[in-house]
Length: 326
Image (tube, rainbow, N blue to C red):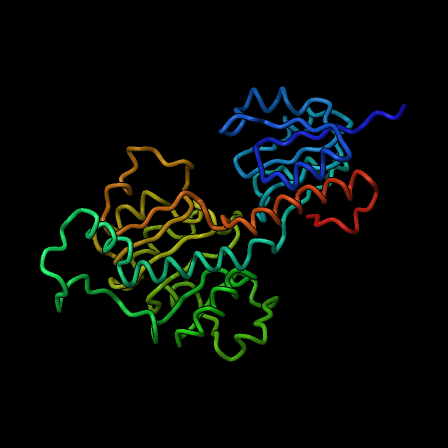
């Protein structure tokens, strides 16, 4: 009798992906409402044929070595894969799956939603009403904000998410500028052709009214937004990060916000997640904080679950060309 492969799912995910895998394999799921800690992860990966992991799981050389010779694929429930040691996996012939463009449009929706929230003070106004501070009805100078239409949108990173944000900005007649590391490989796309202009980073930071970080995390982008770059921003500008927390040097951002180098920030991601209750950002009124929900819609998370699962199936059944692989 042929032994069924065993798949480890390190965090509860939408059930459609789980059921797809259960129909073919033995499936072991972390049922806890938290990530596995280091020791739990080391213990859990032993003798598995596939691992379906999430961003919080650091899949490094030790984890890969511990898993043993049966491991054929590590499929991550994310578009990014910086938490996986690609080099160590490649040396052992282990394939790396990811969810690709599945979350692009949903993440772009959130990014532009944060642009609107920062400019028009939507979150602050909601709290104002809930705290019973609205005493005199309509007022000419109540909650004055900043327009979005005809303003300058600066995109740091101009991949699929950056372009999707730019497409939304065209409906607000925004001037769109972008910075990316490899300008030679940029395909503007027909939807925003002739509407987006490349700028060097310092130039973008100095003229944009809304700056959206949409680049991937790598050695070049780690702490890219530090105090020297924050000082370049307009005092009326807003910074929005829907990419990875470590692209911003958080300590420098706190200093810049306190000293009014910029008007405010909206963050869906942080250097450490979840953030500490002592994080000074929590007490700042000119900041919007979200719990990493960029791709958090029912349909997108269901598609991510299915993609992560089918990547495993395709690799285990020898159909690598059908899988989304790094």
